[in-house]
Image (tube, rainbow, N blue to C red):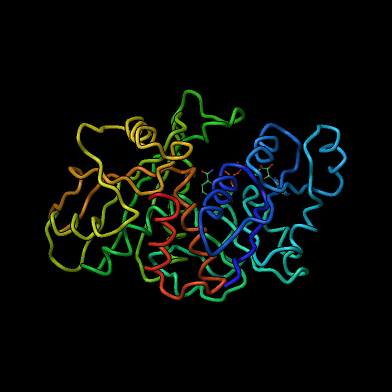
Length: 335
Ligand code: NAD
């Protein structure tokens, strides 16, 4: 079968990882990536062998900088079956008309609203619902992290209510513009935060509320998750369910922080120190008066990357079984 032809529009934190993950699969290929400016990331993308496309008005700047551009973003879109739009939140929306005009499928990221596509994706929760769709949104890092634990626990024990508190990294490691530098910022101050409602775009029947704050770190987010369960179970039962999920990793053995989790990612030689799995602290999994509690850490730069690959596979109908796609994606990227 011919490989699905994919473009990545917006080659930043998420886009560069999605491009590499697609490249690792045997049923899809990257036709091109887009960069707006001929900067160091464009130069590296060229070194990595990606064909670079740019806004038509900026093609001259690429030529001047000595970074070859293969054509305009419009030309890139015409050559593919599906575009993974990884432009900054709120920017991607404006590209919908371009994709519709070219008759190509498109995936957006969590920075866009659910309404843009009408389908919000998380592989373990609703893969089959994305089969053959033209437009899909892969939910944000935090929502992905929540869906990955809520869905299997709800299936096993039933969930009455979820309360999640999110301690969020201020920005990504390469970002020199954002803070906070020396503050803890309730974000947003009005409750609940959008994260709980966003989970409901994927798993609508879940009763969930959330609060979030930003702190001066760039490595990962940490969630405190509390769930009221319908059926009786022990902490060990919950560990078994979470342990059956390939995208959940238990952490312990002296790991007491996000810094040490990233060190593990370095030690196991993950590309860019990526930790694609939710990292659940084994010892934090606790049942108290019928309620479940645990801590998990979420690597914001990479957790949605395997989800993008699965979304492509579902939309292109390359695999009808979500579990098989998850397995295939994991194997190809080394998870
Ligand atoms: P980013 O700023 O790192 O990368 C975006 C890239 O798009 C940049 O290279 C930028 O130059 C380029 N770009 C900007 N405007 C463009 C345009 N009009 N056409 C083509 N390219 C354009 O952003 P990111 O962190 O990768 O976020 C991308 C999306 O993924 C957002 O929706 C975001 O909410 C979501 N997301 C981000 C994270 C994260 O933690 N970084 C996690 C999950 C989801």
